[in-house]
Image (cartoon, rainbow, N blue to C red; front, side):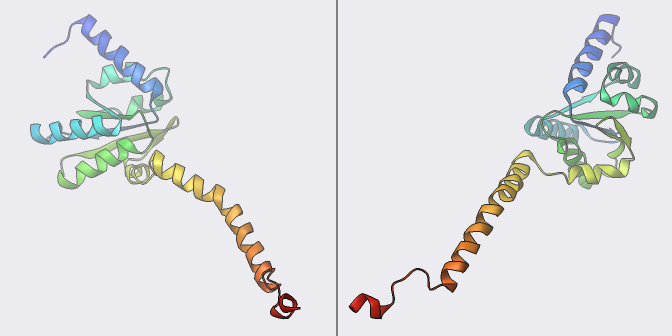
Length: 173
């Protein structure tokens, strides 16, 4: 379906708005993917905070101008599916990696994070990034560890000195 000029402008504006706020981008070749697989991937994308879109590469190239994803402009060739992580950096990588396991036609081609163009193999690295909840849990453990170490040290000193208990002889006297 051919788009007229105003529809193309709307698509570019929508992609530019998403790209300006996104944490990461994964562009993947999707030729040969079935409608059912694409529908399942779109559903999972909505649940995980990933903006998923199939657009012409020329429109995507225009949309990323002025964003940190401008570095990918020259790498956009062939039929591509664009996955922008809008909530956490690793979400798009996890989505593409998960669906590539069951679909050998889906292959990551471009990965971009923080204004850097990375090889497609970095989709595994991106997918292994912790989720927001996992990162907060790790931070909580790191912040709690000094207090826990201090408590263990105080307990060890107290145990070594008899724990502050009154000896039985002194209590009976």
